[in-house]
Length: 142
Image (tube, rainbow, N blue to C red; front, side, top):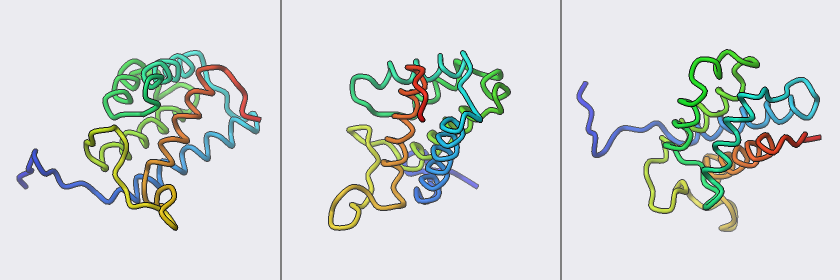
């Protein structure tokens, strides 16, 4: 099957948003309960992303790819691979929205024009970004 690099076929971003939201919620709950704590490598990766997003507060696909590359194989094995799963879900959510000028996913507005609809990854990406900043700073979420 031929692919069009100019207009690639992308799955609906709703599925990516739901998957990312689930990863953020699961990891946050595990951290709050003390079942999971970030390892040194995971804190290092979170710090890299926190520094990369400090200027505009936006996770982008290139930034997430660089973080995954930095951790490579150990990131997927360490601590159950949970941070790697969160970053992978973030990357899927970023890729299905396609490139945009301001780095933010283009989604329909939510109820009464506020926020984003439930299928938009923007809110889940914001939550993922906040979780990464907290991890980088070593703050417990309890």
